[in-house]
Length: 175
Image 1 (cartoon, rainbow, N blue to C red):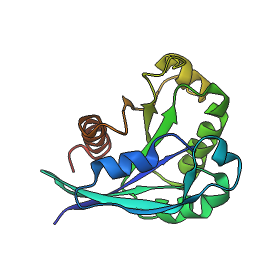
Image 2: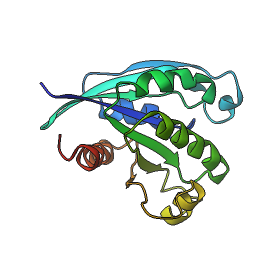
Image 3: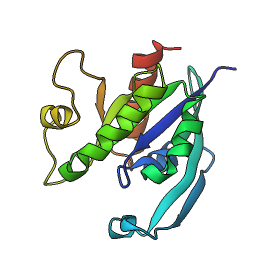
Image 4: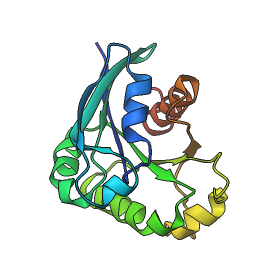
């Protein structure tokens, strides 16, 4: 049986937990707790260890892991990266003040994994959403090669499955 592990990373409020919940076929394991720091200004709860779900695809089973968004939980990023086959970093394109944090997470991943992350743009329907070229530039991608990018609505199953297919096809070439 072919099992791949997808790590979904990103800043607080990027849509990681929603992505994991939306794609899951058999429920989700979640470590959501009340937010006790500046995260509470964005949302009442936050992931403190990981989120987990799984999905069966024609190419095999994908175990989907969502990371916490705060840097203080980077030890979980490190642990989850160790066995990841596929990487997706969600970036909320309507919050330019948080692009530096997104860039730091991408850098953390790139320093520790030979796998290039796919960048997933979320919140693209927001009135303050910035165009992809502006976001990529703000993330430090100003020259070729540019990363693989997908627009994803973490609350929409079809959108999440489309993003998952792109990550699998683009990174694994259908593995």
